[in-house]
Length: 109
Picture: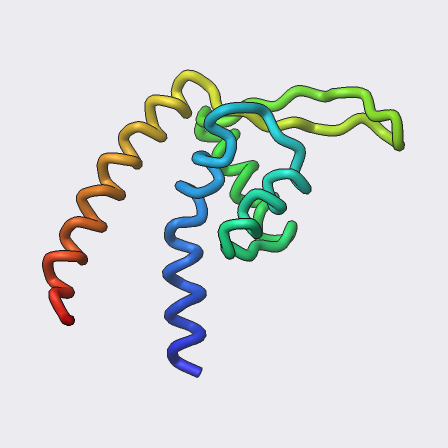
């Protein structure tokens, strides 16, 4: 039970970074974001994703635009703002430092 809880906390800790990475190259609809994350085995549900998207939007890292859909109501597409792109670059540096530190600590063979 402890392992599953720890795994969930670790994934939650990097989810913000992963969402921003997924949005780095093009605007995406929520189901596309989820699909991209799932392809990398980063499982997330809408109930977790929407609050995080709203927080990132409120912090100025994401914007969105509405796009008409041929199959129902308009869709909200999220995209990185310039501030978000700068923040993503900073997160990438922090992530690389963290991975490097863990790699050096974990020299098990």
